[in-house]
Amino acid sequence: MPATLMSGPRQARSLKRSLARAERRRKLRAFLLVVPLLVFVAVFFAAPIAGMLQRSFVDTELMETWPQTAAAMRAYDWAGGDGVPDETVFAALGSELASSFEERTVAAVARRLNYDLSGGRSLVMSTARQLARLEATPASWREAMLAIDAEWGEAETWAAMRRAAGPVTDFFLLQTLDRQRNLAGDIVAIPAERAIYLTIYTRTFAIALSVTLLCLAIGFPIAYLLASLPEDRANLLMILVLLPFWTPLLVRTAAWVVVLQENGLVNQLLQLLYLTDGPIRLVYNRTGVVIAMTHVLLPFMILPLYAVMRTVPPDYMRAARSLGAPPFTAFRRVYIPQVMPGIGAGSILVFIIALGYYITPALVGGAADQMVSYYIAFYTTDTVNWGLAAALGAGLLAATLILYSIYTRLVGGIRSVM
Image 1 (cartoon, rainbow, N blue to C red):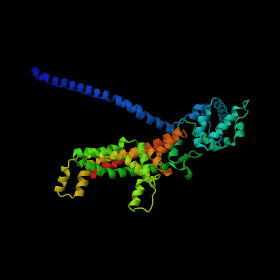
Image 2 (cartoon, helix red, strand yellow):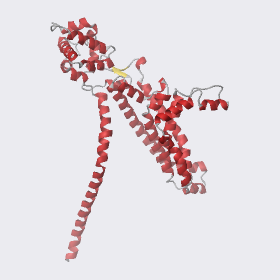
Image 3 (cartoon, rainbow, N blue to C red):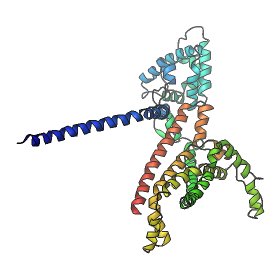
Image 4 (cartoon, rainbow, N blue to C red):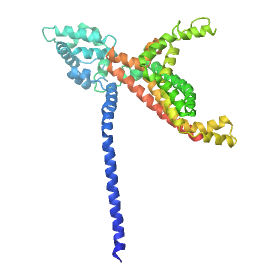
């Protein structure tokens, strides 16, 4: 066989290896270019979310402050008693109560118990203070603590202690679902007068959905007009769309308070046109919240829609009409499927941003219009209840992911039908 024919396969294999090495080097260079971005996302996005999720179910304050008490409670057989432990657990708790009061570390545990047990903070602080003043070790820690406060002999007190013993707990997550564990450890609904969090979640998603639908209803024709105009006129109108970005959010929200108040411009205009007999309430209620949030988030709907509409050739609609399709049918069967990515992107963007809004509902809304973000801020800054704040954030994140997956399936089904 000639040498030239034998060298052909070897040259092909050598060329393949060279191409494979070149492809690996290209992929490696591309990966190295995005490494800084991956590190940034991991440090400033993924890590904070992971820390938030961890705080929602990790509970180590009692275990770190009273390690012997936590170990004694885990070792005690709770199934055979009345919910109140024996002297061994009381002895561990009594000695650590006195020492933690002297070391000034008891306040954190007292605050944690107060989340679960009404009056838990005062119970722990007063007992620790009096035990620290004892000159000698009591013969019975149980009797000494019951003499200070009879609540140490109640099963509810020790049930709360066990729930706070850590290292993991479902207490905060159950609270956000208006649920709790009873003395037997079963998950039950909390009393109706304390059940607020499911209502808050429902209110948050209802406001976000209302704002998203309004932004879509207003933004779609605006984006269609921008995409239909010549480029110079479209750029001029785009400046008006982007103008809100140049104004601080707090200023825009405060301006809506002035415009929507009883003597504001809107009420004056309605009375001037004889549409109302007197001023109507448009601020410090749900109406004001939806109006102000729609104005703030409208550009986030227009921009994705405009970006997609600019890529749709107008010849498609003319071709559909020339083939006998009515204008609405051509719009629904030809135009809408092509701009569906813009509708989906704008809707998801507005909806997710609206879920986390805090300033606008706080300034324009009333007490019954506050969203989940308000309560997250409240538990973070006012009551320092990081566990409940993290659980509310985790619930909001989980609900958002579930709704997003449902939305993508619905959009995919609609597009396949169209």
